[in-house]
Length: 205
Length: 221
Image 1: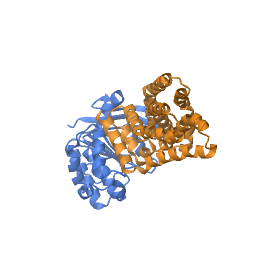
Image 2: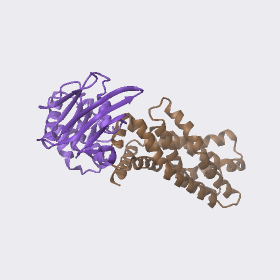
Image 3: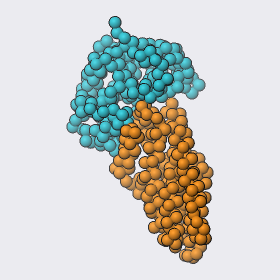
Image 4: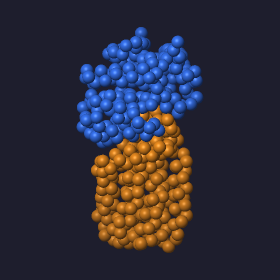
């Protein structure tokens, strides 16, 4: 029997006076991937941001190992690796520098950076400034930042955006490795993410 | 403090990679101060009397010039989310950003201002007072400007709004900064002015990082 690590109960969010998420509940155990699906504006990004505590939920609870995450926000942030709509990379820094800075900002050891760069075939680009990269290469760099993190929960907003087929395969492999190591992932996506055993939660129905 | 140091080092490195942003601020300061003698005329006594006010105003405008990108760059490229998700207080991140701004604007302005003071015929003591007051006063400008920059994140015409918000809050610093140099010119000491500038800086340091962090959280929603 797998242990539930993340438990979301009755989560509701209102944005601009409109209820975007209503009474969302789910559980996630180690090694599980939850794909958030639904039409544009169905609340996928809002749910991810609410889980990261970037957006205030109107109601509901998010529990990690049975503890309400709002009780210790800093500890919760250590559990979360974030990939947003925007890549969160500095154009005037190299790929390697972006990942090193991200690790230091999270007070994490940079021991996984080399492996993450290799996983997303970024070694030849590691010393290039991010502003010189294509959109797909930047997305890979942002994904490598997530993969280099020590956080057990990956929150990914449209991770397949701008990725070509080999890069999508690299993402699937990285996700597979993370899940096999007991990690969790929640990904908002319009296209099937292609990881075997992934659960789906359709929003906005 | 790893995260604080990493953010400070990152912002300084970004400025180092694009020094043009700082050079524009310093060039604005020089051009703005040089325009006054050209407009007012070459009367040395008049220029020396108004020098402190002009140099302090120019320093204030120059410092504000670069503030609109203080958080907007992170907001635009998604890095702000990473700061909001960093496992250490956002108040420290706000402080690191303001410190980086002060290092690349306030500090060079404090060094450059006495050189411009020579153009206005300020005495040696006056130049020293100008440099010292700018060193003590410009951190307040960075913190107040940081608050205005955070409050105007994502707003249309954010730059103009930022100036409207920040300028009134910088008036006490401006008065005591310029007043210190004038006090030296009239033979009075400027220690009181300097102490008040220091108190204003400490007050800003003790309160504004929290206000900036709250504004950033709001902007991140």
